[in-house]
Image 1 (cartoon, rainbow, N blue to C red):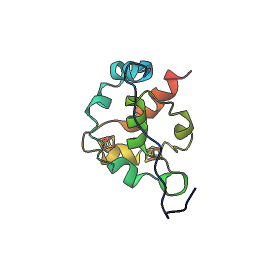
Image 2 (image 1 turned 30 degrees about the vertical axis):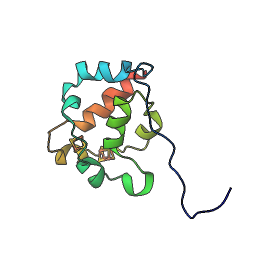
Image 3 (image 1 turned 90 degrees about the vertical axis):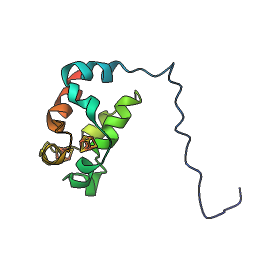
Image 4 (image 1 turned 120 degrees about the vertical axis):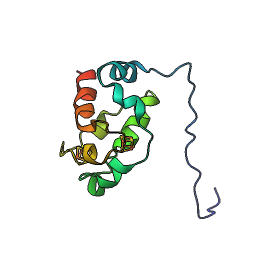
Amino acid sequence: MADFGFKLSKSSTLDLDKVDLKVYNLLCKTDPDIKTCMACGSCSATCTAAPFSGMSMRKVILALQRGQDVRPMLGKCMLCGKCTMVCPRAINTRHLILSICKCYD
Ligand code: SF4
Ligand code: SF4
């Protein structure tokens, strides 16, 4: 294939009829503040683990809303709580991370 100096990203199209939202729906009951996330990225910008691990609470929440497995990302969190302090929607993200872990137990 010719090298044009750029690559096309993999399609992120979802078939919403096939997405399993079991974990997200469970979290909406245990941690209803997850529903108020506006994907601003403040949590990711201040994350202690982000610079060396790619951890992003914003991506975790978006992945949950898309029915994707977030376990690989959760292992990078250090539970420092900085994301909770900066969230403009006052989402208790640190508690949310622990709740997500419980969903997969
Ligand atoms: S800072 Fe709060 S509202 Fe913004 S992306 Fe993170 S969790 Fe969502
Ligand atoms: S608690 Fe986890 S996600 Fe939040 S800032 Fe700390 S390392 Fe990042």
